[in-house]
Image (cartoon, rainbow, N blue to C red; front, side, top):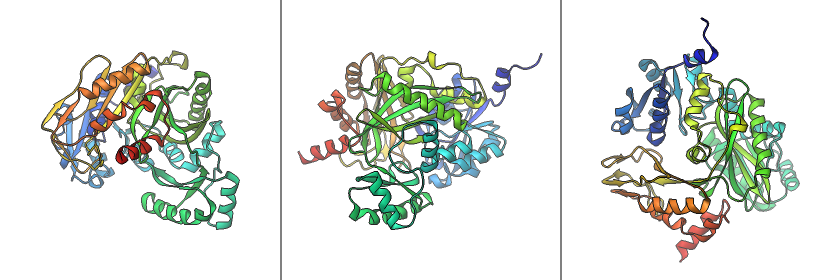
Length: 461
């Protein structure tokens, strides 16, 4: 009897190498287990005692503590995959997750990259080509040209005047809040261009810049998509990620408060159309600025997001499993009509850092107590006795809650934060507890600048 498409797809791989560390490595391993797949974990020398190593089918040390010599070492990761007999590599988030060259190398090695194709990553990773693709698909974009800035100062000045001050200069290959500078008026434009070009060259290997209108009081809204290789795509509702410090997200929620379904639906459908046009596969996130009832596309993350749990809690869809199934070649098992988002969810990023100075805090966790009540979820890899390394990002856990309403979800998060105890290192839990007592945040009256202003007022008090 000939093999069905589903059987053929399922045979593409049965072992996944997880090219990451920390809570996301543990999360992906859990998804693999539920799908009946073997999981191969890797580590640097600093992560040899990581708890997810003991539950993996294989645990391979690929290099020294430095990320450049381990988690960013493409040759070492590919060698580990071959040694372990893995048929696919899941990059998680960060590290090599949005590296088109790595995705291409994985495929050329005869393995499956659990994510979009290298060409999709390249298209959406360059902010200029991404904006052009989104404009073609009818996705609303921030005012500004879809081309790189020229070298001629006079032409740059004319572009800024056409957009209207204030403007923002961004690195075409940028991300993570780096390579951007706000320009309030014409007399500082050319100095800002020179500084940002040099910053972009050093950080991203390219001095290419672009310019957009700077929105003064926007919110940061995201739309989650899932696509298969068979021309199917859906969006799973929206998130608000406006609570940011130095362009880094601190708290996320779903859905974004105060946005009516008839306003968000056309944007979500446009995102789906954009995915179909570029042949996107797997999961991805469209990021927008939202101001005065209008959406403006800023970038697409071609990977799993840190904040994916809030969408999982409201949609009921396991996004990591869906991502793996898409890479296996399965047909998406839900249509847009099947997607229903219920209740409200918050996620707090718990970091090993001083709650006042935000300086990283390495050391041994001497005591750990986590909440386990209904409606509360904790994604973490740490335990009592775990040594927090100084080599990597300070994220050590994600505290997620879900409740029927936003007010109830906020109350549940207060309860969850009160019941979370981590000793031996400093964490940002006191800071998060104070934030969830803030009246403006409780009312949903915040934008992407609110948290920085809130922190300034606290320091001045």
